[in-house]
Length: 350
Ligand code: HEC
Ligand code: HEC
Image (cartoon, rainbow, N blue to C red; front, side, top):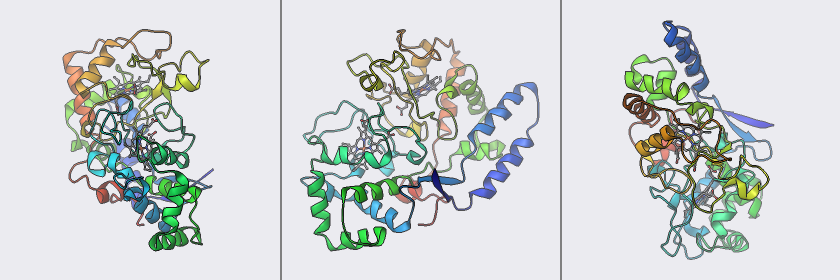
């Protein structure tokens, strides 16, 4: 069970959205489009697990921790080093940087809409829940390089953190569990802001261009993209081999060696703010969105694990351009600072 926090002011927007959908003009071609549009209505509540319910004090503590280099051994890094609000909560790199200046094996995923990831986290699903992620970057020697027990003693020695923990949990004791709970609560407020696409779903017909609308049709129809990039967050939170990885990384297959379908399978990423992010896929191996679309058009590497949904698509040049126009409507306009992204107009007032 999850508790739900109402997103301020969105209930009315949803009603308008549904009214807008009901009013679509109905040619046969528009029929599919109208039905597809219903799958993308924004939710009105943020899901929080009952074991870690929302409170403003916990979110504020989590925010402070997320930005504070106190959680790295030499004080040089924080969560925000790689999950940057101005870079759509990723880092603008193909692969994350190690503390020594090299490249990690993996691309930094965006944290947008992480509250809605109801399956395991990480590219290969190595983290069972959001509360279990933070210890990995904090304690990894190549990353923040701070032992969890040292993190706890550092925070315990800091008066303002003792106050923060007391406000969030009722007493000032610092523990690993509390640290993770606070960080998770803050991250659940990192919500994709309203993009032109959302205004279109809400019934504003002129919010996106005609090519983008045709691209939406390709996305849901001929391209089959919505089979995995489903719903308002554009992910099924599941793992698939789309025929990209060629190296030794088996993805989910490392953890599930008996499953044929999970060899080379990685988590379907959200497509929110997709054209604002750089280098795509779990290893950042695909440099541009054009190259991503070409990959799907060709169908990737044919092997036993490859998803049956991935096959040559034979898209025309116009269909590819339409798909790209559609993907661009998933990015918000204007400033991408922390307040815009974390607390958009429709987020809870913390
Ligand atoms: C050096 C860059 C870097 C830093 C610093 C960093 N991360 Fe990450 N983060 C990554 C990478 C790379 C992954 C992918 C890891 C994987 O899949 O195994 C990731 C994955 C995640 C995920 C999973 C997202 C998903 O969609 O599955 C969460 C949540 C997360 N990080 C939160 C944090 C928090 C909280 C901190 C600070 C305690 C932090 N990160 C610090 C690079 C970083
Ligand atoms: C079988 C499920 C599936 C289908 C169908 C699918 N995708 Fe994906 N998509 C994924 C997975 C899984 C990844 C991550 C693969 C990896 O990291 O190696 C991905 C990655 C992407 C990325 C890169 C995202 C990022 O943050 O790096 C884009 C863009 C994308 N897909 C767009 C599309 C489009 C457009 C279509 C339709 C033409 C499509 N996808 C069809 C599952 C799918």
